[in-house]
Length: 76
Image (cartoon, rainbow, N blue to C red; front, side, top):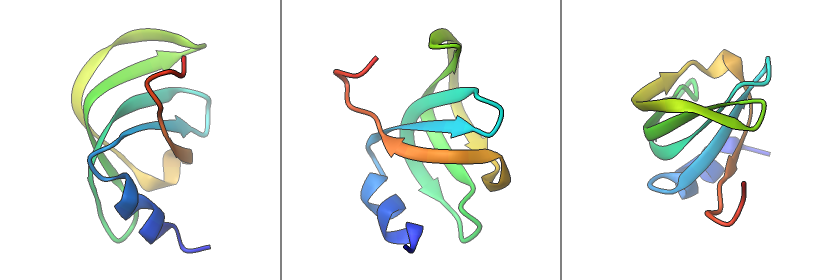
């Protein structure tokens, strides 16, 4: 499966990104590049299912990402 169309559909939406070591980031996907580095805004850092703080705008390097999914506001 090619992830590029999936990521295009997520631009402007709330997403959840889990890194390889378990830290999660919830924010709005602004953009991504050909390497699938992700740019998020309104980002919160989540460790052990607990929000640790607001980070604002961040870039996540592609090789750290375990998965990306759309984040529904009804989810924890």
